[in-house]
Amino acid sequence: MMNTVSKLSLNNEKVLIRVDFNVPFNDLGKVTDDTRIRAVKPTIDYVLSKGGSCILMSHLGRPKGKDAQFSLSKIQEKVSEILEVPVIFAQDCIGTETQEMANSLQNGQVLLLENLRFYEEETQGDKDFAKQLSNLGSVYVNDAFGTAHRAHASTAVIASFFENRKAFGKLLEQEVSAIDKVMNTGKKPVLAILGGAKVSSKITIIENILDKIDHLIIGGGMAYTFIKAQGGSIGDSLCEDDYLQHTRNLLVLAAEKNVQIHLPIDVVCTEEFDNNSKSQIKPIDSIPEKWMGLDSGPDSINRFRAVILESKTILWNGPVGVFEFTNFAKGTIALGEAIAESTAKGAFSLVGGGDSVAAVKQFGFHNQVSYVSTGGGAMLESLEGKDLPGIAALRA
Image 1: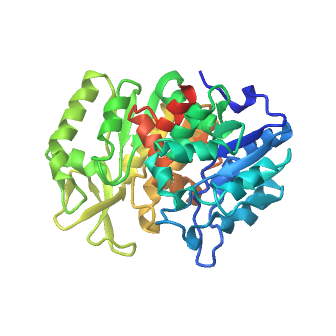
Image 2: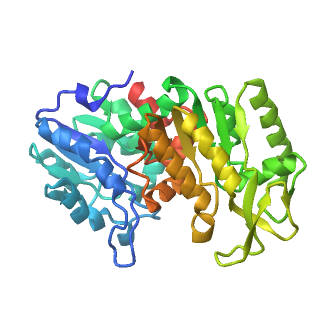
Image 3: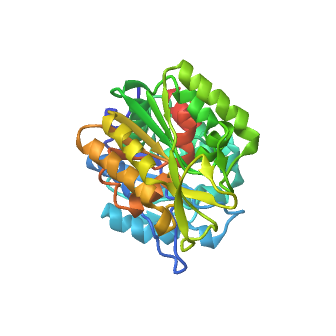
């Protein structure tokens, strides 16, 4: 059971909300992607509409002590613009002055605290630091899925000071529900699409989800380790030789669990890792020496598309080619198109993990899938079956 923000009485409450405002900036100090700020707007709007005030706390980057280039004052204006309310900024996240600002906050107002990671106690999960933060509010809400896998002061430790006055924010609720839909309650057939460079980073995910899925598409760089493990010639394609036996074991395990694994059958290969290098289409197990596969070939695309259109629940984590190169993005684009088409027909689709999220945004699919996760590492650890500290603390 989830104790969600909508189940709490918020009138006259000072709601301390852990958000994830770790957003990218350009050289001029302007926010280049405000997705994470927009993602928590529904929670903040809800608190304000119910007569509460909001105290927002976040980290930004990995500063070593107090460092102006990592100050959250840089986003004060952007947060005000998105929330459509004036945002007050505190020069610190703890201390007498910050406590006084929190105490004097009126219903309907929003206070943004300075970067939590200006204090090493945040990442150390220091209890005294968490206690000082907890004194700022009367209710605690976690809406930062991107940091839910960290046992930090503001995500895991702080919750113990609120007992029955802590809750999932609307974004965190959506994230947890989306993963649960893939892992436990989704309609069958359930399909997982795993891509990206390395099979080593996905082994524990594959092992954990084999009991939950019916089909597994493996693409991108990690596919070549599977092909070589089965005796194929992959030329100079990316391969983790230390994991050949691991991949053979996974193939056996999948067969035992009646999970159909779909590997690419042809690839677009080239002699150089360069967008403009000459290319040719070859069977994935017959790539010439000195050539490397950089994208799914047309037969692979057709095969993947057929599986996607048959599936009712789809997880996509990782591209199936070097989509950053326009000449090797066709496989990833085709995958997005097929997932969008399947979603339009009623399938549930969850996209997560940095590169796949970047791909759906770049190619305009983010509004054509069911849900795009905001947390890379947190989502991967969820798929591995780990209990995330920030979520466990809300349920304790």
